[in-house]
Length: 141
Image (tube, rainbow, N blue to C red; front, side, top):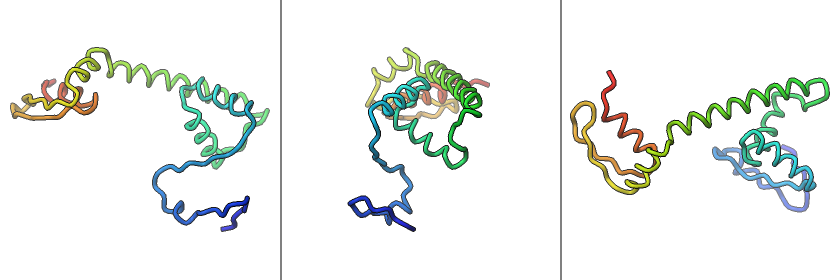
C-alpha cells in the first residue's frame, strides 16, 4: 500500500481490521462546509452522516455532473420523502403516552404477566422496554 506523507506518518495497521467507524479529518473552505451542512440538514442527516454517505457513494457512482443532476435530484427527493415517512413511524411508536410511561418508570424494575400467564420482571432502561412490555402482555390473537 502506497502512503502519501504529509508531515506525519500514517498509522494504517490498526485500521485494516477495524469494525467500527473511524474519524477522518480534512480541511475545506468555510463555504463548502456551510453548503454541506445545509444539504445534510435538508435531508435530515448530520453533517458527518452526509459526508460519510457522499464518500461511500464514490465507489459505486461517478461524481455528479450536469448530465445526471436531475437523476441525483430525483434520488434526493425520494430519500427525503423516505426520511419523512420513517420520522412519522418513529413518532407513532414514540408517542407522548409511551414517553411519559418511560420517564415515570425509568430505572425501575417492573413485574407483569406475559401472554402465557408467566410472571416476568424487566428493568426499564430505554423507551423500547415499555413498548416490549406492552406487546408481551397483550394477546392479540
